[in-house]
Amino acid sequence: MNKAELIEAIAKSADLTKADAGRALDGMIDAITTALKNGETVSLVGFGSFGVKERAERQGRNPQTKKPITIKAARIPSFKAGKALKDAVN
Image 1 (tube, rainbow, N blue to C red):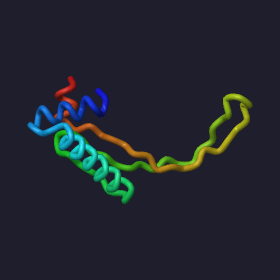
Image 2: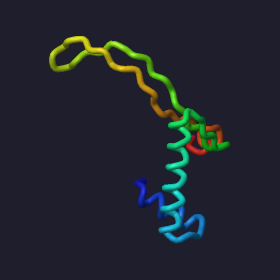
Image 3: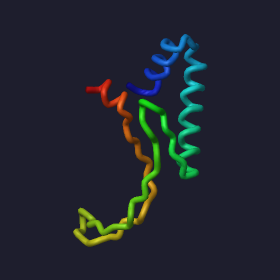
């Protein structure tokens, strides 16, 4: 499912216009992104939690030259599915 299909599904499910559903989806994505930038966790009970994990600096290897390189530390977004979502999928 892509973004357009998700907007259509939201519009149908919530009895909204596609434009309203698109704005709602964009607003949700912006709110989650802002919270993660600020180091916060976003929890949607039953669905899951969005958070940020710290990845340490590590050694890697350039596949073309086979020379070792250092991969910088990074903050990466993560998602942990909630129990209701896991149960729905299984």
